[in-house]
Length: 324
Image (cartoon, rainbow, N blue to C red):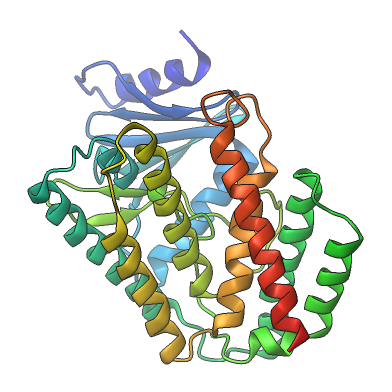
């Protein structure tokens, strides 16, 4: 029995809970997620889990009780910290998309869930929008995007003199991107894999981050365009994966409605098209930064190459935008 599973069993025993064996939901070498007795247990090192606990608590205090799972308690076992959380659903939207068989009835259900997800992202913004919207906070959030883009370009072996010049111009022309930039709390890693669907088809967001993926430190604030774009690109990736097996599969309406939500954000002056383009470049770079055996396997390398093509196109779009 591994150490994390042993800790979960100790908790259940101390609570005198009769339960079926804990079910491992996710995990790596240093963290795990288990489902037991109708609750979720997240285990990891003290620093990482304490950061997670603070972030969830911050969202809870901001009034996001029906957006994220609620924390029930935290428990420490020597160097391991445990968060006991509300169980909000077994399936992610990613798993629902993977099991989609093309039937119209099921697609209508997916479309309704997608609209609920977009409404939830909008609600998250309205609840946590920063009324001060200070210039210094906007600069910090913008800089996080640039730092992430540079780091990921380096990881993807796409950082050259042209990229360096583009980043320099993005730095010098920040006002173009921050013109309509409203700040709020954001998820920072929103994708189809981080949205859980409950029994009543109501979505909840899980696994938020304090920084953009691959960064250790980030701004407290962000712009909602980053979450919307992250979700949309994850939909595009999943559609591309499924089309390999069934060319008839299409999530065009889901993607179109997500694009409509982005356009509504532009109309409401929460962000402009320029920052959307930058967020798209950053998200493509996140996917290009991972060159693990799984991503570069014979079965999946085509998707990695698609992400690189998407990133190259977005870098060109940004260059053209800054030439105007």
